[in-house]
Image 1 (cartoon, rainbow, N blue to C red):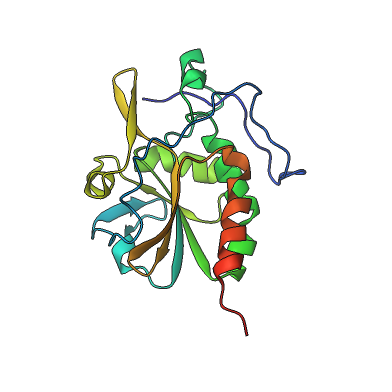
Image 2: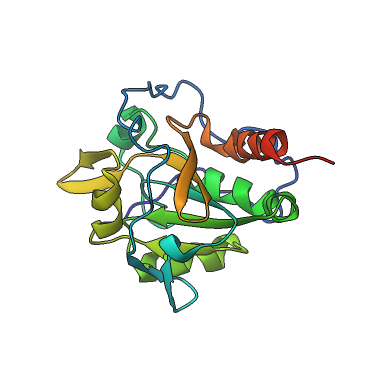
Length: 202
């Protein structure tokens, strides 16, 4: 399944702190679906990367930021108006662009960044090229990784999508969870503030 998110970001973004989302979107609420994640060990699952390799997040070392998103659209395919009515569904492209624009700051804080969705590897590669993403997107198309973590999902037009959330990993364990995430285009700044607060000093 594919459709476009009507609002795309330019490269580079002239005003990365300015929201590129339409007004009046429904705000997602915390339904408790991620309360179990903090402290969990990441399952050893090989995820296909847009770099043409397999990535096992359970083998990660140090700090890893994993932002989970529902679906990245394309400019040549219209977005169903019903998509915008789902709390938290809209904003995958602006979120990815924001992580792109703040990538150097995240790397300076010692964090590796990955995006994960149930989109196919081919679909994600198009997004990486078009949006000039400096990090890899990982495909959980069969949802084996997300099912192991019991990540929340929603259905739309007969397809299952992952709800938007972000995991901060310390080696192979979940150190922190952001859920729900809103607005998604400003979320990387929230992640940076968290990493700065928890960074050792002295």
